[in-house]
Image 1 (cartoon, rainbow, N blue to C red):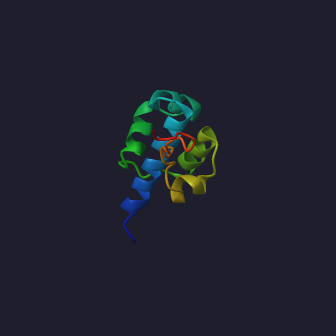
Image 2: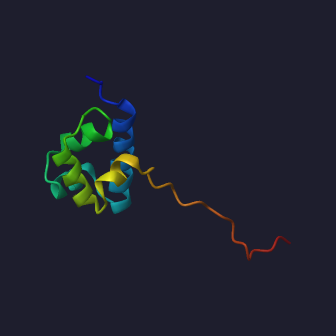
Length: 90
């Protein structure tokens, strides 16, 4: 039997944390939307939990995305800061 892929757990962890923050939620608030215990969210975001398909489905539903987004999408990057293009240097 093949060992679980740690890289996939960490990608899931990063994506869940990034999407949760994008919603402006705490771990406790995301847990209430799932519903599950806050410790489960903490374990997922640390990459310490090998989630079930049912948990993956609950997370995706709560976060408003597809299950595949949680596994394969890169976390949303912080908005790039571009200087004001209309500003003129003296």
